Amino acid sequence: MSRTTLLECIGGTPLVALTRVARGLPVPVLAKCEHLNPAGSVKDRIALAIVEDAEARGALTAGQTIIEATAGNTGLGLALVAAQRGYRLVCVMPEKMSPDKRRALAAVGAEVVITPNAPLDDPGNFQNVARRMAAERGAFLADQFANPANPLVHERTTGPEIMAQVGGPIGAFVAGAGTGGTLTGVGRCLRAHGSHAQVVLADPVGSGLAHWVATGEPGPDAPYLVEGIGSSRAPANLDRRVLDAAECVSDADSFAMTRRLWAEEGLTVGGSSGTAVVAALRVAARAPDGPVVVVLPDAWDRYASRDWAQAVPDAPIDRRAV
Ligand code: PMP
Image (spheres, rainbow, N blue to C red):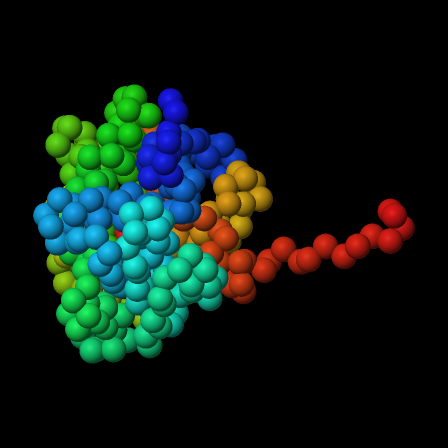
């Protein structure tokens, strides 16, 4: 199939078996390679869907500015769509996110505003700052945390792709939640098709979401280093009704698994992929009724400056070999 614009290259990502890190488990573990989207993450899907929905509603018009609160990936997806469609882009990011993502966003022409790492009820929180700036500037707020176009595109594209690629019953679907769009959308798709797959949240230790899945009340939160997933409070786009369980994964386990994915599988992914795969291996070990599908949300290039990505020492020049 010939694709003529980069926007047509969004989605349709491969589903590959983790042949090494999942060796010996009772069911296959299959990874949905969202890091292979054109702007490098699962967020390309929602960037295009949110813009197209807003254009159709007349909420976004030619030459307008798009503002978004982002961990970085939605910003990079929106930058791709904005470049192709002629919009300006402002990205509001918490301080915690990697300098690599900030630099990439600035390089692709976005205005980047950094906020302190403040909780959601603080006016300085990145989501509150983005909302205020959009109102002040008369700009369009993409609002990925509450915009229904986010889970809907996963229900209409990511979910059906996975069902077709597996081609039979799915034992479990495992993903992290930043906005919840991926889990909610794929979860709704599976439920709508009568799948008995367990839908499992992979949550960083320190996030309050796993406790909320179990009890309906957010758990205590604490700082953690994995980027893009977990929260002190459940976002509107995370639908608790489609979730069966949660697995908590430490930073150390997430980053160790990410490096194994690089070295043993050739999957050049970011830290939240490690979190999701650790959770998926635990679920697979419990022998569900079919393969476990896990989402790899983004690519490693956006974490190159992080300490956890420095485990491989720089190779010295071997003068004797010259
Ligand atoms: N991993 C990373 C690195 C992300 O940036 C995000 C989105 N913030 C996710 C996972 C989670 O995706 P979702 O927003 O669909 O829950």
